[in-house]
Length: 616
Image (cartoon, rainbow, N blue to C red; front, side):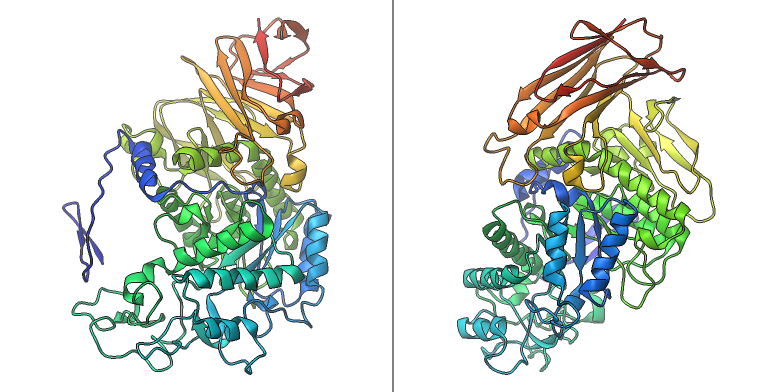
């Protein structure tokens, strides 16, 4: 239990345990989080497709209805990388089963997704149905035979209640459980070849308090001091703290349950797919980022929930779980067109971007809205897809050294006190500022621009800020994005899947510094193989602009870099109209606009070639 005191101070009250204190003193906020992740482990590198747009709902009702949504997204050419299903795909909500009537066409849908360069993700819960007739449900029968469930103090499986009714709970602290979990996933994957997994209810969540028999008396379930937890009891809506697990009593392992499940699930996915695993978990613990991403749980379709998602996003960035996002447009309750449009604009800049909806609510995928709203959603998702090379490079730095992806402004401007409390804006990396609209009925937004020059992402026009709040125009079809001076963003012509986008020409956006050096870079690999950086199977290109020369320098090369070309270089902040532009010493046609943007098109250079561009 943590109490915030006015001092300012934090008071920690614990019911016991060994307390080890680690104090990370870093020279700045970025370094503190890097030091923390050196202890807990750096996050996994996600597959490239994980950074695309994901679509889900509880209550599609059938695989055909799910398929109709996928087709509608394609019909309107709205980007989508992954289609998900919630628990309604299962037979009686039992893990590793398929509703053979309503979801009979699911294998065909998955095949169709794969043909279109798209992916499929399913939900799984750790509660295993315990009421099927003996011999009819292998996951429970085999788990029971091998002794892989949480047990009561009497040594019998602890029975609680989750979606399928009475359930036993998998004990992921037992190495043998990991093998059984793998075998279950292999059996199901042979029928429905999913590409990623969504593990839910893994606190573990229980619709009963403790078990069907409650919890026994004793200090584990009724400690001398109970923190201010839900229901004023340690067993409220979960399992008994006295439950026996392979490694220890549940009292000692409760907070680790989701982490242990994620570790087993990531390992199983690697063995089944032989590729980087994609996994999203509800319950998390320090070092979770090594195995999974996270979504911020069941939110509501309300403006305040959209706003709260930003501190949620930034908090998980600090926890070393960079692949994070909230349910776009809200999970429960009914969204409105305006809210869903604004939320899609914000959500297009969640590192993990998924629209998810509850059952018995009207549909809220982009295809169901008016042409104007649908187009606004499509446009901002295309903007996200254009930035995937930049976002992917940020994830490389998260994986390699513990950098944050979505970043609070105070991380980059720690000396500027005005940034310390900002939670309505955030950065991608050090250089792309996102200023979303978070309230209804407005056509402008006020955001803070730290001291320096900031360029409008879309036009290249510059704002020279003294460190001030700036009112920005924000009609319903516009999300304000600004690029910090001194940075070079690798972007790509967007398509409707990340696989198609990857093949398109790059556009390098050079946001010139008014005083010093301008830098950027690109990490590039095949987007799915395991340990590409560790094995040297990647390309890394450094971009630099000094005075009036831009250079692209290949630092490390692999075959992937020969498959993509640099098509355009756009240079923001060129103060005098150039008379000529030279590419590797040869004259090239160019355009120059009054807002000081120089563009050189049709370069047709392989990313694997170093080159220089000079303007005179």
